[in-house]
Every structure is written in C-alpha cells, then in structure tokens.
Length: 234
Image (tube, rainbow, N blue to C red; front, side):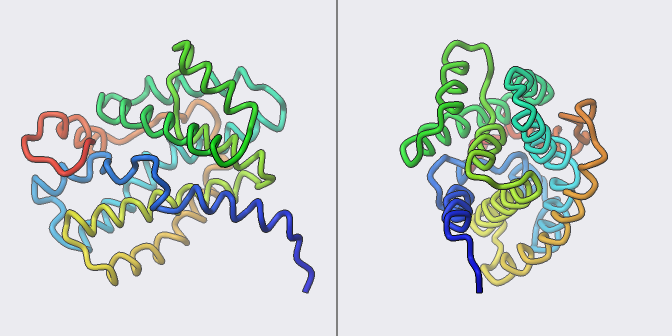
C-alpha cells in the first residue's frame, strides 16, 4: 500500500483544527439554536436534526461553505485582495450582532492558535488586516487559507469544515436539548451525505449567493440577543 506520508500528515494537521475540542470558542455558541430551544421548537433529537439540516442547507451552504470554495479559487488565482472583499460581504450580510461578533472572536482565536502550531505568512497578513480594521475576520477564511496551505483541495476543506460545525453543534445540543450521545453520533453520521450534496451544489454558485440566508434562522439569532436565560453567547 502506497501512502503519501507528507500529505497524510498535512491532512491530520487540518483534522486537528476541525476537532470539536480545538479551543477557539465554538462551544460557547449555538448560532440561534438555543432560541429554538427556548421557544420549544426544538425539544428532542428529531427536532434538532431538522434544525441542523436546515442550517446546513442554508446558512452553511451560502455562508461559510461557499466562502471556503470562493477563497480557494482566489488563492489558486493569487487574488488575495478578493478574499478581503469576501470577508466584508459575509460579515455585513449577517443581521444578528451576536453572530457577527461571535464569528469575529472565533476567527481571531483560530488565527492565534493555528499560528502557534504552524507559521503561515498569509494568516499573519490577515491578522494585521483585522487589527487595522480593514477587514472583520471570519473563521472560514482562516480555515481556507490553512487548508490550502496544507495542500487540501476545496471539496476536502468544505467537507472537513462542515463536519467540524456538525460535531460542535451536536456537542452543544448534547448539553442543551438534552441530546443523548448515541443520538448525536447517529445524527452526525447522517449529515455526511448531506454535506456531500451541498459541496456538489455549491459548484454552481457564484459570489452573488454569498451571505444568502433564510428568515427563520436569522431571526432566531437576532432574538437570542434579548433572551433572558442563556447557555450560549449566540
């Protein structure tokens, strides 16, 4: 059996960042799911799975998933300035302040930790752009730069990032729904084919779709801002 050891090592480096225990603060955020809990729209595993599927088909597909795909194209064409424009589009497309702020915090933490483990010049540049307030910061952009640097292709990066979101959201649901660990793993397994479908559909999308969303998901994120009892920051 022939194994490209270096590529395998690079792949594992990216998997490490995708682990739900990677300390970048995602466990503090539900991105609107908690509001569905408090309004009794999510009360069990089946309800949560419907929410997660909807989140993936909408906010992930037209948000961070598409963003990674577009960033890979820009990186391959060495059009770095375009990536900074994507940062502005995706950030300004989000109506919920908590979601915008949470995303920016996660991005900053991700850059710092990835740069502690690796040394990627473009991430240093991104960090400086954030400090100068010429961009906002988005974890999907950080991840795209990192995964591209490690030699992954766009499809691999989107699937891994989507898996990371699913894993984290499920762990958060285990804490909040409550969702059993076994049920969580079954849901995680069932989302993998969905992610593959989303990646295939994403190939037909251009920049005009970046940041598109559905009212229910976004309203839940906005309503979370005034929710009295909360486990999560968003």
